[in-house]
Length: 336
Image: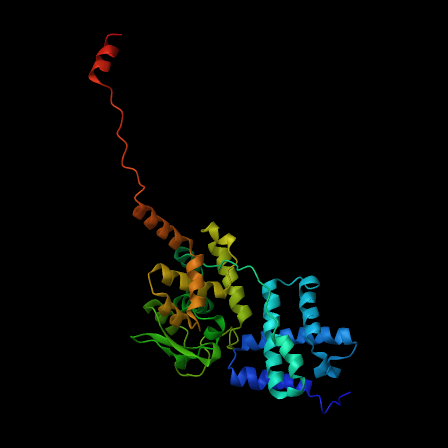
């Protein structure tokens, strides 16, 4: 049996997270947390099935049979969906690729794991809000109060730019250019930078909360002056959606998260006739295929296509002639 020194599994875990994900791939903090959580679940599963502690696990414990057993356990015991199962598998495969680069002695063992493919999952319809629904939500923050100004600026910024919530929370004053032409520099996945234009209203809202004397300070902060958190943004958004639902009851059918505002931005751009490749760059998507998902989910665009098809098909009937009585019939009726 290998000794601890000859079997540096935990060292490779740390190098995968710190060196590969963070430094080489430039993965976002959200991705790092998701991959780390998936590996934690996998190692806890291995520890339970080998009856050893996580610290005592070895490289040879990571086999294709145990990976498959873990994936089955996710669905049966944890009730995870096929989509979540595939995400966990992606994290494991990424880690195994890292192992293959550092431990060729188990190459055949790793290759069998890398050959695993995800389970076909049902594609969910993308959740988004129509512009009038977004306007109803934006009308809720009390812009006379400091927190209301912050919330209004944040929600308007998310809708204007289609930024991921992590991108917005990482924003500093130095990233903003609030005089014409107004724009913001966003740092997205893989450390990819992009420039997004800002509406005049967005620039005005941001100027009310930005501390121009501290360029490196986060733009969106909580009541203590610390950086605003994802949970804080989600809580504020839920509150305003609940208030807006009193006036727009259709909002009650939606589960509105900060990412829904990103989807809403994409769909509004499509409805405005913006080319899908432009939207790809606007949102920071790696592939136009990701952006194209919004086309299939927008019902209004499908209605417009159907109306155009109906007109082109020429099936529309002309106006029917109204019935009019003949002169002889009128004479007959008058004689009765």
